[in-house]
Image: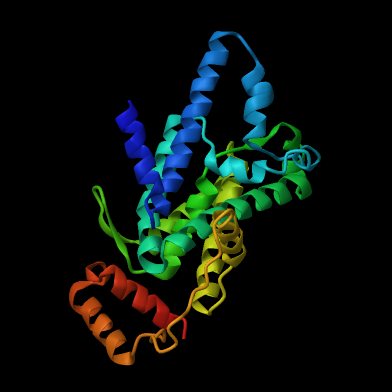
Length: 287
């Protein structure tokens, strides 16, 4: 048991490992909620549904939410059903790898958090302004990482629309068609049982698209998250003065490098590019 915990701790503390960390946090919260739910259910206690779950899930009613503002963060790390977390984590892993390869670990985490926030905000707006949803607001809550996953999926499709997934019984399909299909399904699903979740999906997907488009133009919406994370990380650490090498070439890749990468894509496809080549291609798009 101790060796398992040591291995989990080692994997969580590894650098440049944001995708695995997010998945591990989601799984840990799921296990804690599930075990707690079983124990309290067997003891015939109502504490789980009366107190514990409402402090993780985001409530639709604004008058309830203002007393539980932290739920706009906790909801996108929380799941109750095994299939819910399974499909969310699979989607996060598949699309998250593309984001990580193109724009790195830090921006993957930013996109996950911002997508969750965008989904939660749109959920609150719809349930407190649109009459069809307002009548359900007092009894509606939402949890799950779907909005964050949709943000990452839409971001990946915006970055690499020609990237292909090999789907069972279908074959290679461009990512932009896969993400587009799920967005359409979520839009149609707003009038069905999981209306709140589908609204959050659309909010996350919109954020993912906007985040990448602005990033390509030189604006990173995740900068406030980076500042806060850096401040938290450096609490208690001794201050060090860092000298930069002004002679180091930090410019965009040269045109010859980009031409070589484009030639490689035409010969072997996008998937043949290395992580460094993908990052150079993305940096060139910011010109």
